[in-house]
Amino acid sequence: MTRLATLVAAALFACALPASLFAQPQPAPAEASRPTGQGGQRPPERGPERLPADSVTQHTVELPGRTLRLTATAGSIPLNDPQGGLQAEIGYVAYTLPNADPATRPVTFALNGGPGAASAYLHLGVLGPWRLPLDGPTISPSSSPALVPNAETWLDFTDLVFIDPVGTGYSRGVGSGEDLRNRYFNIEGDIGTLSEVVARWLRSRDRLLSPKFFVGESYGGFRGPKLANALRSDHGVAL
Image (cartoon, rainbow, N blue to C red):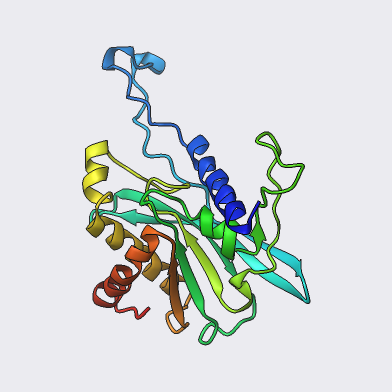
């Protein structure tokens, strides 16, 4: 299998994973059929399910001619309405090198395209410190996925933040289908959401002085200039 075919296969496999993580929300039971608590009182309505707290781990990756010691963060950034109600949670995976100078260490934000694709293509197929290989005689559709060190990772020269837009990966919005479409599934909503996520990540980690870059694949390339403009005009952040 050629390298390009390998990356495409890996990306397709990785992007298929989120579909199994989220079931479509089930409609609320009819009022008469809802369970009741003690004394015949109905239990309180449940709020939207929240993603787990950020997970931060330390790793060492052995690569040809060098060893990378890195910090990996699997996290989320909540987006709220003006009244403080949760509107969405945006999942991301970030890789950083500890003890690097944040004023000089670059950070690159990566997005795939679609729209509607998670960042697994770039994450596990091209840029991340590990790669998901799907070539070789032992690979079959039922094989357990096994990551291997990625000798071509960009982490040598830039920190990496892989972002999943609403509706991909672990990212999801709160509300009805029509409400979500109007809020996120259009050009303005998509760019507005992503620019807020990037700006908040930078501020929360004191990385506003870092050299900042964006890499996008397919529709992600269309997002690039619009995201840079929104960051500058809406958040005062130069990309």
